[in-house]
Image 1 (tube, helix red, strand yellow):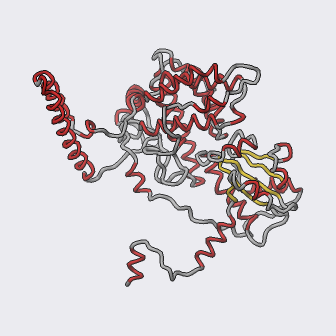
Image 2 (cartoon, rainbow, N blue to C red; image 1 turned 30 degrees about the horizontal axis):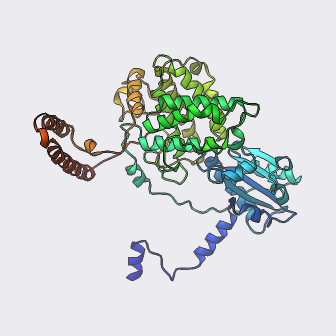
Image 3 (tube, one colour; image 1 turned 90 degrees about the vertical axis):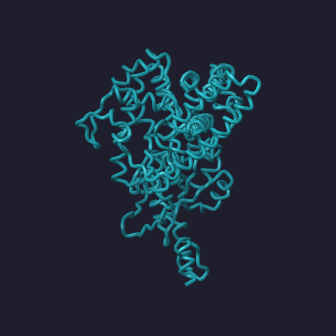
Length: 490
């Protein structure tokens, strides 16, 4: 009876079999070795001189890296499972999103990048002594590449079992219910993406060199300073742009001074992955890339001047992605789209908003096919053509189908402009009060200020308390309302 109760409440049993722990330990040993700046040098000293070492440099937010992860783990299991194949290869990886100094030490420019050599080759970070392979590959392709490095042949196939740990993930239903109703793009996610974009840009090492990179940086910060929808981020970007000539001089090296990285793009606060609408159901899914899409959409929706600001938006976004977005396949796909005739003709704000929307839906269509083949997406948020009909009925023509919708571009533009130009904040008191009640309270406030004279402040305090009480009641009703469902954004 007690055992049943413990199981029901999700508690572990002290008398459970030790076999599960043994299996888990074996599976963990077969996974790639996760290296950090603190463990890197000591770990490579453990690699025997006769063995090879392959290290993948990736970023946990990078979609191409996420798609490549299962194949890389298969390669690790192939070489780490006993009895080990010969010549032996140690398979490791480094998350460049967190291990910035370590990745800059090896001059990593794009993700994912694999380096192969022997232990001593990695001691000094010399690229000349190591072989390099980049981009998403199959497990067979990686093993074949390693065979070439050793001038041997690895018999990679189904004869060697490659087991996997089951990846823990958040409950899909709970994540869907926690995502904010997509009436507008989320202020918090746009700010988080802005802070992280700035951090990753400042952390990008070799990418912050040269006159082309400097111009791309200046264009992006100028656009942020004029078109960012959040006042604090607009002010921070403006301050950075004004100091850019001093902190990133256009000299022969064209390299920024250390003080540039000390500036904050959105005012005081840390760059952290604290997502609301962009929260995924699995670790590393959605997050930064979702927030970055949202940021670029918002910049388009606020592009100035309205008649011609789209052209500069296109220039600034292309430069940012090309020079500072280090997911290699993602950046290549996006830059290719910006080189097409429809992108070259973008002039106005409307042009930019609609081009960005179409481009994003093209990417969604491509990723939808990839996710169906590889099952590497977020199951809670399958890719779709956006916005769906239940979110924007007028955006869809009557003959439209969900799989391949036909669009009313005028209505779609109006929807996108409203969605992205003024992002929603977390709900304040006035947002939680029904509109009729809010209007009545506003009228009362105006009357108090006009007639109460010296007692106006006391009367207004009573009004504020009444407003707070109404907000609490409205919030409770909202939370208890049955059948509340949320629509995720792109």
